[in-house]
Image (cartoon, rainbow, N blue to C red; front, side, top):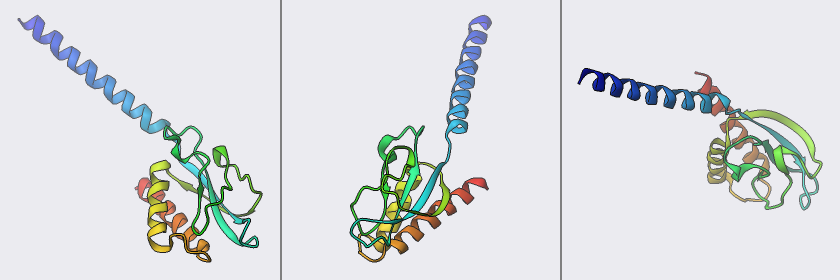
Length: 139
């Protein structure tokens, strides 16, 4: 009876330890995405602002190659955050992961949406949200 109880406990401990190790490895191996803001654009006379984020290695493929922007539906970003349009570099910052980028885009959309002429405000909202999320993660 004691031997059975002992084996059960060791099995439970092994399962618990394995779960913890797998969870820890998943957390520690996820890298923050680097986002780069550019200025350029097809229909804006070159003043449109858009953001490309390097989401290679991210488990959620939704964000890879996505152009983050307000006021336009043009595609300016390629895989791994590559600027496929050739815009002018403005700034670079960290934006945790795809979920954070989606949340920050939703926040920027609620304030500025697809209103032409407000892409710079949209981009500022997105970047400040990403930077706030990054500083909260450090705490």
